[in-house]
Image 1 (cartoon, rainbow, N blue to C red):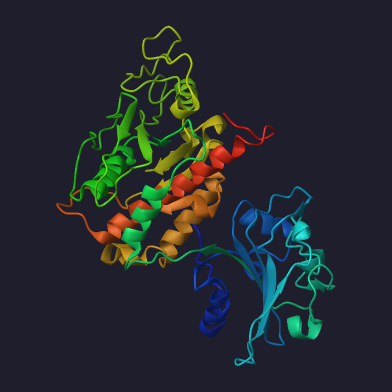
Image 2 (image 1 turned 180 degrees about the vertical axis):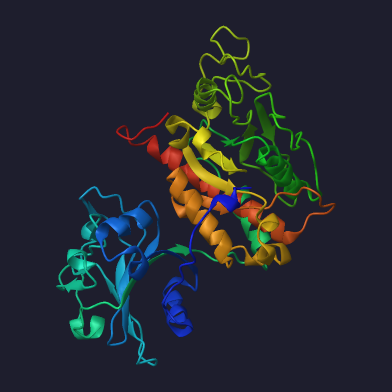
Length: 429
């Protein structure tokens, strides 16, 4: 579990009232909004905006004025400060008036998706929020065609400007079967690869082995403990392990394997070596290789795979958070992370302990996720909360759903790995 006690953040909440939030969320199939930026708190300027909103997607910008207009912009893409025009065929502007409840939402698509916005700031061309680093908006219909009166009532002074991350709701009723169906139907589009290889890394005791046991339990239909787990001060996992999950729970095919490695530890000659980490990614280390913290694997080792194929390499790296040991990681490790798993959420939030369905409604956990996202430099949407089976005697659907949702996110991240193989300029080994 992440070191929640070290997170010092004042509670920042949205200025939108209940009706405004409901109206806004109706644009996105009533998904949840997680507040990233509030100009009245963080500042009406582009630098503050980028500090809070870079590498977060999808995002919704919401501006308010004295005339009762709530208007803004949605994009699926990142703000990266490249000074480039960003392509996004899903981007749009929107508006509704708080004083005209019966009026329909205004939704305006870009006339040219090649120019959805410029990522120097919240600049959508036709609407530039925080214009000249002030509480105002620049309005000039062009790429986005709209009537200024309908969009903002020609009132360009802002009373607030917020940015929120859009998070899809977890459907709890029939979702377990749907997630299992997605997983069993997934397959790599590279013919030489039959299963995605997913590597779990993280501090000692973070829950890497417990996560495998939990996933294995979901497919078996009962709580299983194949991998050694515990809370020892040093890593219980001293071998590189590749765990294959047997089909079950009505699933005929499991399209992924989970790889477990030595924990990340403080001190000289302890924990997973950075060179060993690189060798794992490249497919050089074979199953059951015993790590030597004082010396990485050598090419003459019998467990060294000299000519690994694509099927032997790691396709997705998942960081499992336990305590605040992010500083132990080298930049070379961090840049390889595709997802971050936050374990033991039920032990840190009473709201979630009472009902796992509250995991995405908990302001406390949302703040933790934002802090982890900022420290590791990953998108907030890549931070996935889960609960492992630890003391339970039987499985339950809510725990299963969070675990299966994490697997689906891993498979989607794996697709990104294979997508990169088709672009020689971005190919990543």
